[in-house]
Length: 192
Image (cartoon, rainbow, N blue to C red; front, side):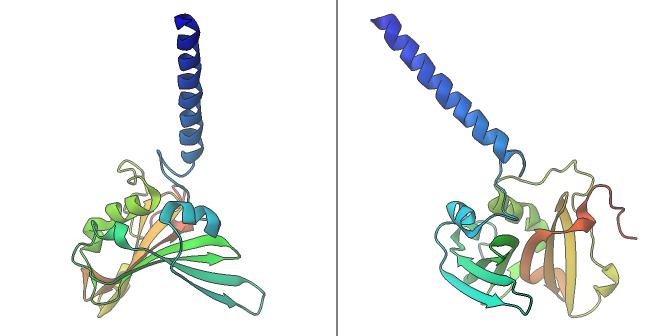
C-alpha cells in the first residue's frame, strides 16, 4: 500500500517537473526564463499584463489595423518611483505586438539610461545579458544629441532596442519604447 502511494507521488512529481521543464524550454526563445512579447497576439499579452484598460483602433489605406492597448502601469512603479501618472501601452499591427511604450503623463521619466535594464526586465521577465555583444550599443545618431529633444536608442538584446526621447540631458525622457530593431543584430556592425 505504502509502495503504491510512493509510486503515485513519484509519478505526480515527475509529471509536474517535466511540465515545468517544457514551459521553461518554450520560454527560452524569449530569454533565459522570460516571455515573448513581439509578434504575440493581444490575448497572449493579456496573460502577462492583465486585462487592457483601453483600446484605440485605426486602419490605414492598405488595410493594416493598428490597435493600441493600454494596461495597468503599476508594475513600473519600482523602476520609476517618482513618476505619478504613467501610461503603459503596447502597439499591435494586424493583431501582433510591435512595440511597448511607457510615458509619464505628468512630468518626465527620470534616469532612463540607468534604469533601462529594469524596464526591460519588467516587460520581458528577465534582465538583458551583460555579455551580449550588442548590449547597450548606441544605434541612434549621436549627432542629434545636441538639441532640447534628443532621440536615443540602445540595443538591449539581439534584435531589440530601447528608444527614448531625452529632454536636454539623456537622464530625463518624455517616453521609453521597446521594439524590434535590425540594427541590434549581433552580425550588424555598430554605427560609427
